[in-house]
Length: 448
Image (cartoon, rainbow, N blue to C red; front, side, top):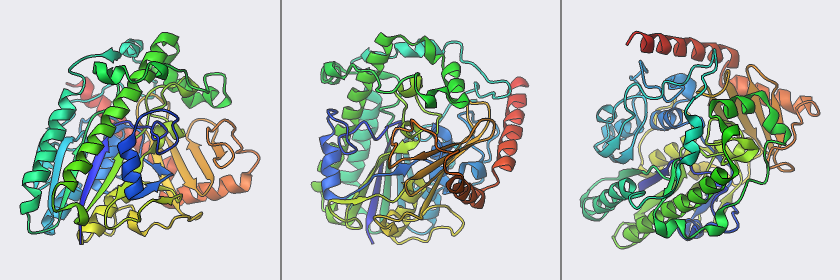
């Protein structure tokens, strides 16, 4: 048995790290973690939005099961036990630092210890109407959220300092396995940096390679998201600034990964503790004219997963698709606890390097699109199954940027992946179930 640390950032598109191929962003500590362990090249979130993704991770269940469809937290089902509670009940000391933003308040999540939790304030995000589609009238003002603020990283540093203090002072005294989850908010929007990090990337003021001229940018759901966030009003100067600030935010997170590794190495726990760096979802960063998350395109739905420790091979690479629920399952494998049999996910430790048959699933029912959508990744193929728009099929080995929809050219492959989707859920039923649930939330908000 070994201990397990999950370092969970917020909104980190893995393509903006040197480990996943970015040409100049400085992430030496993620590289260090990768050299010591295993890189999962094709990792996905359960849903490209904070509360749905984090709720799935905490509960071990699909988003449509938990019904945390959006960032609105009104009337959410709260009876699902978290992995922190299950581990605690089995004698594992489960600890959580930082952001929660899930289906229940931090005090009810059942961890043995929970510190500096950041719950979503009630009622959460109320701009989630999809019939009709809500437009955030102040959304274009978000494009000004970049530049220098000397207090930019203070909140994350307080959480990180406290977590590292726990690791130095409390962890060595425990006589049983433990899990530690550290949640930081960066590189989530807004893209504020301290002067040091802003100055790292004057050359980082670039525009995305693929913009609104692409076929994928003209898909109805892509147009919905641009309208919802008023993204077509963003200026070129704002796009440049947002992307520069994001790089600074990512390097700040990388520094914290380094601090974690240094602290672990300074204790007696390094050889018996696993570390996984990951995130809750990605960020489009202007690709196809789209910003932030909420899309099942790769930049939004992909996450980094880099794992090191006694359970993971050194300098290894896994191409088999995995997801955040697999990360959660890995905790149970490492600490020797029994995971509920009806939870989704498989321990990363058991995933082979290359399995073309393994299926990964994601879904989206939140703000900014007219209706639900589902993603299936299997081997080199990816299906996005839309409830109120044309479906998309991408052959990612030939088209990693999702520029060409080949749904009509490969009907048998599209049907095969749709079959995989229907083995997980009934997409039509779950779509209407989500709409009905959100209608109840909207009525509850109107009655306040």
